[in-house]
Image 1 (cartoon, rainbow, N blue to C red):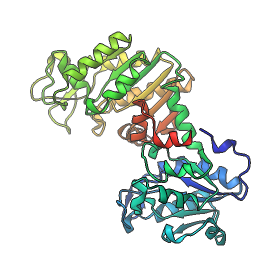
Image 2: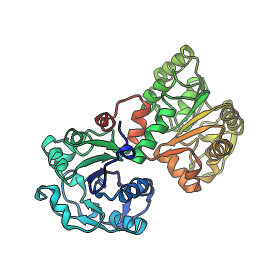
Image 3: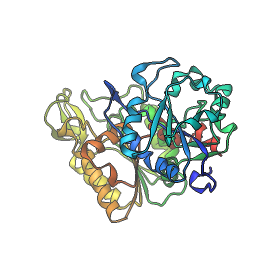
Length: 392
């Protein structure tokens, strides 16, 4: 994979830059600019190299149709404010743009082609569509790691027709994920949560041979608690998962990886209630587990203190109610503390986890925070991502 940072001859080149600008929009307003902010370094680098930048991106799922509320116009306006350079949204049909010389008439440094998913050929990974896109530039750069698990025309096929490079943000993402999958500094710990264990089973199975500790929290921990003979009341759980739990425990013993689940918990009768600390054998039929307890927190803190690398994916409890955010906050605080003293390398990912960190305004205090969602999880599963493979 070649990084655009290492390409010497960029002056006056037209760069087709694939970004993920799929930010949440409400009434034409952006409610979270995290994905935009992350790609600013790549844009600034290309501006400094005196290139003409032609952005390819999408918002939402228009399914090959023009949907006005999914226009990239709000993103264009946001980038103008942040970069202080000329930016123009090109609304013309891509097929009516016959060659890259079309862009010579614009003085703006950055041109944004309208939502690439307005074209049904994009998600069909259409070769002819990709070839036409490629004809509009000199160089292709993928800085959309979060889309790179998709076999789409502007992610995979386009690289067949142009010199292709990775962008700065994609480089950072791959570097961080390699630190927790291949170039590991041990001891290494994974703290993993979520409501469904079946959605994370392949990640857990892929990480067990490489990791020293897998700490199970969140809703999926309830399956472990119940498997070991405890009543979980009316707690959320996934049905018919005993075989999955058995598989995880069996593999962890073979690979000498410790699997840790909660020893004590915080419960309530409903999601809006106050918390009560309980031992596992004290949970009543009308109670639900909503966070990890103080003894479990102390155990996790101790494991983090004895780790050199930490991956965190999934909150420890129902953090939307502050009464059940303590476990997640304590985990975040300990990781940040050890980061500050350079004792660990930390990677955090997953929508709910990132939302929690945004709420607490502590995103910048970890070594790397991924907003990549599906691509992040598939990489952890050990899958080859089409967008990354295309760059190789």
